[in-house]
Image (tube, rainbow, N blue to C red; front, side, top):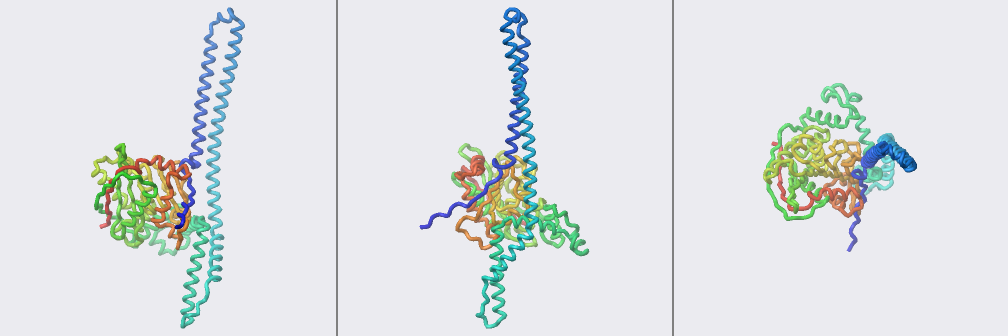
Length: 484
């Protein structure tokens, strides 16, 4: 019997451990000091008023006592006034320090990001040279074939495979290469600098190299000029079945696993969305919506909407037929359950594209006005550029070797409402390629290790905050979304 594999090593950032939380604590402390200073100032005024209100005859009848009281009042006034000034001074210092630290932190992040981008070509070249040298050293020229040509073809195939394996290992050891490569790609995605006139006429002017969403939108628009990525027709939304489940305890791994299951149930013909209502022992209901990730990469849109077109639209922050279809599915499930939309909290969850869609829906004010979105859970999703409101909390799970979560070229914001768990591949699991790290089932296993008994405070807080989404009787409404 072998020992079970240890849980993956994870680095959890954001949430209560974010720099924003530290700066917020400093500013809140400054506010409390200000209030205490105001209290001391008011108390000082009260002491002075007491001294003024003392009967004048007391100085005549008992001059010694009157002098003593006057001395004490003066001493108290000076001390309280000094305390008030000191508190206000410290409060200002705290605010100045918080602002200075905030600027320094942002500058430091930008500086390290710039260094990463600047050194990427050199590191990439070194990785290519090292991988090539290792491939040449380890690949033997076969001499089994009847022809020299076949031997050379076999050698080239083996050499290419060894080079790919070596290069993958280099990227795994230096994940920041992906961030740098994306930044350089953004600089070169512009037709004005290299494309001939006819190409610029067909595809139109490209956006600024720093406008990531604009660049993705440009690729989307360019493809649509060629007849690709069509997404103008509304999706049909059909409920296929409804299932009731007894009371059971769910976990973060269950949430991600349900999203992975929705993805596996989807295909080129249709997408599957699960809308679950969980009712706790107190009778209160909560909703968990599982959104599938990308199921196919066809350039020409077919019946299944979880496609390349949806990927590009969600990355570009543009409209997608998925958004109103998910809205319709949620509305239908709530109507069947006898629940008014907006009266019970909602959690949106998805892997890859499903997580991007979840983030875009949560960021949409009109969607939030209809549904009470409180939480999103994403796995392997690049959502660093999606501006979530403070009323929505995000738990993002990423594999350190997975390039997809970094496809937007920026890390997730280090904010109170954004928690990110970046994890190693579970011990004993081998990655055949870098994209293996993006597998939905692998993310399910990784999320399953993020349990309430882990040491990270943000994980404990996630479970404490989301008790209503995790415990209770469950009704699962299943919908098929299909493009006509």
